[in-house]
Image 1: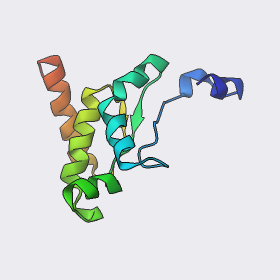
Image 2: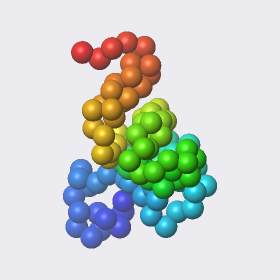
Image 3: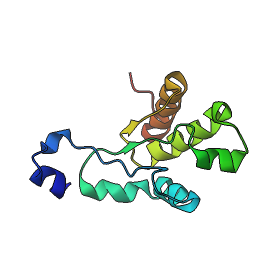
Image 4: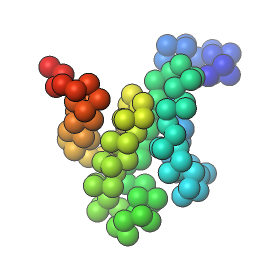
Length: 111
């Protein structure tokens, strides 16, 4: 974050994306999602992009176009662990997943 600000990027425009799948191992990807809340200490909104990633295919034995359920599981865990933004291909399913997570976290439905 500091280097981005020093390079002239406005701090209010910065999101933190741990880069699921980019130069990461299978275990790295799982650990990032599991411990996503540790990135909250950076003080910036967290973005996570797990949609149809290969590690989901490895776990479920599914082709890319069959990974919606696995993707939504990662979206749910990421949302529970502090993700502010999720990048997905299946927007409707992700909206419903995040709404459900939000209701569980709040103990109520947000109007």
